[in-house]
Image (cartoon, rainbow, N blue to C red; front, side):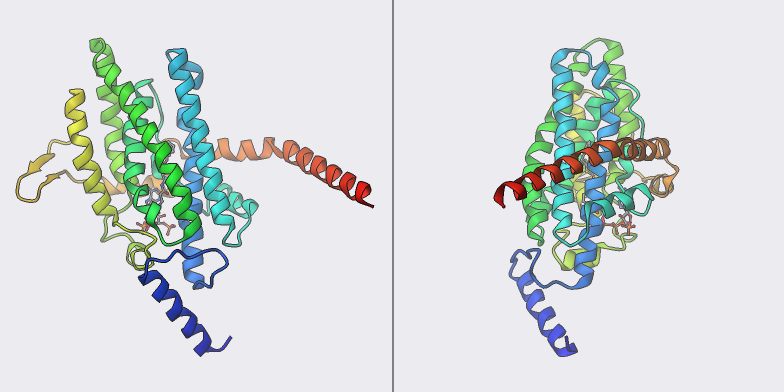
Length: 318
Ligand code: FAQ
């Protein structure tokens, strides 16, 4: 293709983005747009799949049948989200095997938040309330993102995340209305999950290398700092309602800006976790790699079965 032809295609593409038209897999797109989407969508898919581990840890120890059923359903939903996202990613010409390989080799990232341990039952409340709460704030704008398959996957994901957030909040509410020990457990979970939840929304806008381009392509509709402020403004009144305290002495309502001011985030901790040195990074990766290796015979059997059926159909037809 000549330079002029590429330039024309780029102009048509930019005009479609400007008109808020969805870009579909078979449409022409700049190579960088394709790669950026593979990066973000696959990291998102990996996060959903790795995100099943901290909660999976509590399925056998849920305090009642009702809690166990809800937790099982939530973890299953997360598997579903990973699958929609991997499928949406595959429409961009990368295979599922390549995506897994990127995760298992450490080439692709997944969300920092899932490298923290879930040590008490209250963590199931805090993860639903705070982690799913932050995830929804990040993902609602993605329902309107420019790449069609990602936007459509996000519509269903957001509906389910919204249920997850409410079930988490309800666990916290039950604990906060319970005994002194239960309320202390809820407070302890908030203390441990608050700052990692703020970090989960990504580095500050000044440090974010991808935001500017992703906003131009309407992949991102809001910046990391905007989403973080929205999360804080929405969540602090919920903590007040629960009667527990956000672990930030600098947190203060600002009449002038109409937002909460908040304290310094420990970005060193964030980058340490992103680089693989968080409390559970090794455990999480080992769990995923072992699941892949131990599942080899299942994949082989499924392929052999599919091949046998296909051969049978060919034999019948001839
Ligand atoms: N953890 O320039 P930016 C969930 C990396 S799903 C690790 O700001 P961008 C559901 C970033 O990749 C949670 N790495 O990047 C659930 C980049 O590195 P790279 C996941 C992070 O893409 C709930 C570098 O830092 N959600 O929770 C993180 O413009 C409960 C520079 O950053 C999504 O993936 C981080 N937190 O903005 C499941 C949503 N933040 O790639 C189970 C979609 C940044 O150049 C239980 N993703 N980095 O090597 C996004 O919205 C964006 O990708 C951001 C980052 C906002 C995460």
